[in-house]
Length: 190
Image (cartoon, rainbow, N blue to C red):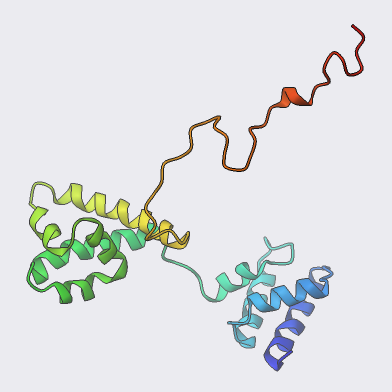
């Protein structure tokens, strides 16, 4: 165990004592591993902030401490709106001939949307004053979907169709609760 990990473990042990919580060795190891990216000063500050809040009555999860130091302020919706806005702005800013500068400005998420819309030239061609609002909304929704698919590791995987209800899945038998009931010959006299 390196010195940084030992320091994190000491801080967590003190925090656990504060909340009258007993941490097993494996819990302490997992908590420490989840907080390795924080400096000891950041972790101490997070613990101090956490313990001063009267609403915090129990030992915190690592994510709660991390949120106090490095809050996540931007979610999928905000990223999607920004990506759609950048696509729109890039059409007039760079035109259809300056693809590389447009790609740089739009960013990875926006460019994934552009690719799903047939490419930069197609986006530039289809955008009109009449459909700007509709396309921007569609791009925003597509950007939200792409973020979720990327997080799930399915970004480049084509979506499949769901199995019909009641169909046997490969290797699994359909559950039949009636099969669990005894038959007339088993334990019932006829």
